[in-house]
Length: 306
Image 1: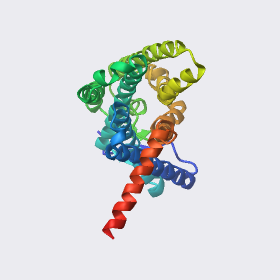
Image 2 (image 1 turned 180 degrees about the horizontal axis):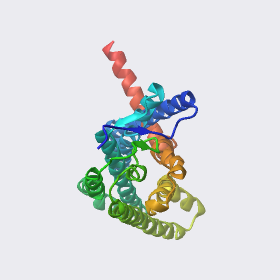
Image 3 (image 1 turned 135 degrees about the vertical axis):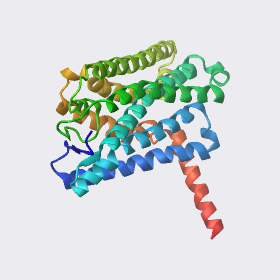
Image 4 (image 1 turned 90 degrees about the horizontal axis):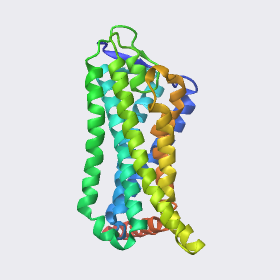
């Protein structure tokens, strides 16, 4: 078992990468934190949709924070090392949050299905207790999907090279360093990733199939456009997240090329959390009005204190 491992991957244009990643990370933190804060403080946003959005924002902050700070430290320091236990922890947290986000997106598609296909029953179906159970199930699903793989990886012997051909501790390049047989872990990783990703995707597609069918039955073009706009943002994120992860995860690791997945991993771990606040909330009039009210109330509160 090695004390530390050397990370490769982002070796060129280090100063430029540091500036760009720092800016992206700062925008991600501010944007997603704004969603959480406004959703909690504005009474008009105390709805199931914004409850799920605030949880998604928390996941995005945690997801990108599991990767980017270490990458930034390695870029600025030039060390590019990570301890063995730090590597396992980063890998586990990354996949725990990633799988939880898949399940959360599926739950959000169900929320949109109820809102559009059963609008009169929406408040009776999507009660706070049910929404909380859906969030808990998402986290439990993510935990169960990743814990076995992490334990098996920990028990592998690592006696050769300590150079990971990636900018974070992804499973595929980490397993390439093991001296023992990794076929069981690779197959388990492939089965679990495929079943969770494709299963949650199938659930989301079925929900949106019902949504599209319900929208097509609306007589007016304006009504169809307005109704579809309420779920277009979520559908956009579904295509981005699932498209990148199906390419990256749902194939046996021996047939994958680590270099070809670095850009996809960058999109999934940095770009998507950056875009989510703009896709979901900052283009939404309801949220923008709530943000203005929150900022106005904060300014008034500060002025009264002075």
